[in-house]
Length: 73
Image (tube, rainbow, N blue to C red; front, top):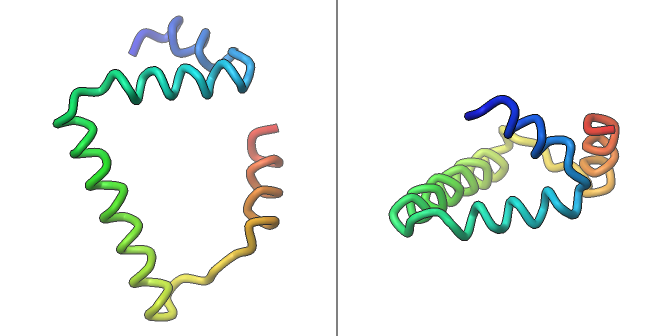
């Protein structure tokens, strides 16, 4: 990826970043989109199985959002 383009995208306001994400996602070819959706579904299933097996702890949405706010501040 072009470093200047990446830098410019990362300096956009959050609302513009979200719009850009949507536009880029919508521009993916259907085969690429299916591949990514399948990967997301597989990861979700892996995490559910790990949680059900007691290998993964659940966290409250409040805690997760607080951690994200600190990380991306």
